[in-house]
Image (tube, rainbow, N blue to C red; front, side, top):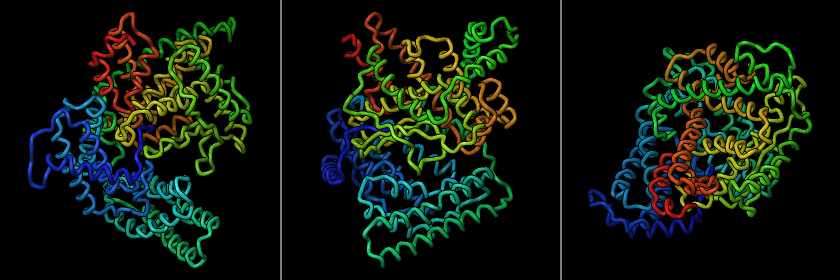
Amino acid sequence: MHQSKLLKVIRKILLLCLYVAAFSACKKEGQSSGPLTSKDDAAFTRYEEHFLEDLWKHNPDWATTVGYHKYDSLLLIPSDENRKKLIGFTKVQMDSLSRFEVNSLSDANKMDHRIMMNQLEAMQWSTEQLKEYQWNPASYNVISTFAYILNEHYAPLEKRLRNFYQKMAFIPAYYKEAQKQIKNPVPELTSLAADQHLGGVSVIESDFADSLKKTKIPEAEKKQMLDRARISADAIKAFATWLKALKPDKPRSFRLGKEFYEAKFKYDIQAEGTAQQTYNSAVERKKAVHREMAKLSRQLWPKYFGTKAMPSDSLELISRMIDTLSAKHVAPNEFQSAIEQQIPKLTTFIKSKDLLTLDPAKPLVVRKEPGYMAGVAGASVSSPGPYDKEGNTYFNVGSLAGWAPERAESYLREYNNYILQILCIHEAIPGHYTQLVYANKSPSIIKAVLGNGAMVEGWAVYTEPMMLDAGFGDNAPEMRLMWYKWHLRSVCNTILDYSVHAGSMTKEQAVKMLTKEAFQQQAEAENKWKRVSVSSVQLTSYYTGYKEISELRAAWKKKKGDKYKLKSFNEQFLSYGSAPVKFIKEAMMADPKIDTKGN
């Protein structure tokens, strides 16, 4: 999710000049000075601009995808020398950050300071300790950035294509260096990398050529550009072929290991507790959810099964009930329209219950899923980068056209009439989209660029039961039961991820848990195993964020007493941007102004 009052490149250069003037007193080469005073919030804000400019120099691909296009034509070779430069950058910036007295800064800048320091520490740890560049060939995939340049309309097509062309010049050297760096890679990640490169090379090989046809670029120049595209595509295919033939002596396990897992969790999630504590909480949450699901299933059984004998095993009882309710779903050709119809209903409900203020000036644009995103039906939100906050936010709705009847039926049973509504709450209103609108009002670009995934995903999960508690779905027990099924995804994602990467859970154990205890389809469970074997920690963000936001609301409610209002909590929480929940909690619970206003 992205936010903040964004600045044009020219203004950035001006602010950098101001930064040099204001900040030179606190850092000169080879010198040190005392911490700054509380009057230096303005200097800190200028420093942030300088920090980001330097960050993008070392991460041009990342810069492109957040909407900062100064370095679109660059592709950094993944060499030892460039990694040393990155470490040098982190050390210089950490030294600069250390000169600010954190507690004397405003709440917003205090958060930014800690977020930036965490990012720098994470970059150092990842480069010097985790060393993913050695064992994860998928980390070398540059195609997605080329696809972004091609498909996003942030600049005239001809300009984007020329940047694309210039960037391609680095591809052969990039992949030659990648082969030197890879040592005993993870087999699952090696296979993934080969498939991704072969599956995505069409962006270079054919999509680029198709886009060139739409321009008035001179034919001679077009030929030159196409020649480079062929060379680039060949280099990518050669890398994939090399990966497929790779037979490492001692391949690394895809399991991260407990020590690395805890460290990555600390940097990526930025939670109050450890990964182990979060896992323990998820295990207890699963038990509590099962108890509630069993109660609801017993309540609903006579309505759907009459006098038929009820299974004595509670998990079997829940499974039968869910299977019966899942039959209520739309027809394949009604899937898109069913999702579109949810948006005004959700908006009306939120207004009627006074849960949040929605900004009518920031409408959500519902559209059919673009061709380059095709392949995964359902719903997703595409938001503009932090440097283009005024751009449209799209609610992409997938199509089931052309699906085999059995596949479509299985999918629609999973996204039945109940789950479809919860999906729209999560992805759109008041979930991801609404959080984005609020986050965009935050003046901090740092919280947009380095947004905390656990806060973003946690908010979307938190809004689901918040809406049901307010009466959405007419308080139907069916709706609550199906939400619990959906909620078990977040809970079991955490259990799965920790058990696999910090433990030794097997595929058989994982699939059994997901099908028998989370009531997922076999295919869905197998796909989740694939995901956990090629990723780590991210799967914990949903439950961790939800847990911390729920706990913060309970503490806030206790603090406010009879002055408590759900709307005030929601809006106050969202006003801080996409910061880690623990930082937001610190600011909300400590702010005396909030305590006395009663809002």
